[in-house]
Structure formats: structure tokens, C-alpha cells
Length: 130
Image 1 (cartoon, rainbow, N blue to C red):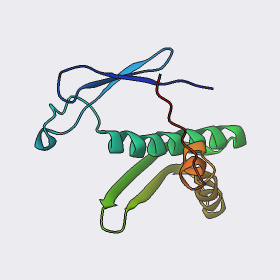
Image 2: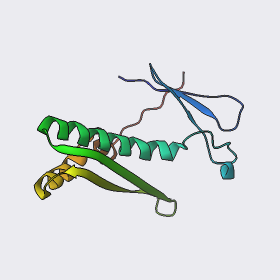
Image 3: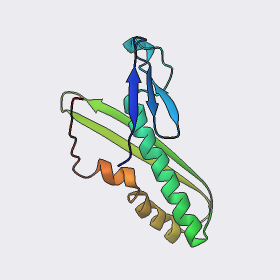
Image 4: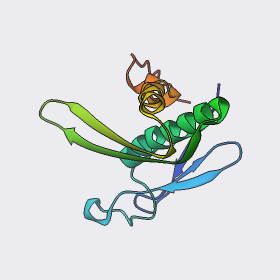
């Protein structure tokens, strides 16, 4: 199982997030008392979907030998606290010499990215205190 570690000290709300090989900073915006030093947690979630989508489409097009020169993914999101719902809208722009069938296939492949699958299927979270 992959592990991600997050550590927050006394500096509001700067959080260091580590994998085995990388470190990023997450923070809250100044309007929420943070310093805006990094992505907010909900932005990290949306950026995971955007990055995974772009990578998945690149891998697929490369395997097929298609002339995909650029993939641009924009993810917007909003939280509706009344309905307890998080809405995500993903806009994809495919650049290159692609016909309509290739573009349609890539749109289908976008939904096969691992993060999309995680977000659209039941998720089980187990919390333990160490």
C-alpha cells in the first residue's frame, strides 16, 4: 500500500505532505486563516483528477501512436454544504492531429483514469489512532 504522510506544526495551516520521494506543501487561503503557501486540500483532490486524466490520455495516445500534441484539463469544483455534495466539472482540450473517432475514444478513456475510478466508486476509509 502506498503511504502519504502529512505533518502540521504550529504554523497555521501549513502542512507538509510527503511520499517516499516527494514533498509538497498544502495550506489554507488567507481568507481561512492560512498563508496560502500551497494548494488547499480540496484543490489537491481536484488537481489529482486533472493530472491523472492528462497522464492517462497521454499514455493511451502514445500507445496508439496518435498525434496528440497537448492535453489541457481544467477541473472546477464547488462544495454544497446544504446538500452535503461536492460537484466536479472536468473540461478537456485535446490538441493535435486527431480525427473525431480518436477524440471520442479519448473522452471515454478519460473516465478510466485511476483517480476518476476512485472518485466515482464507493470509498472505504478506516481511521486508526496510533
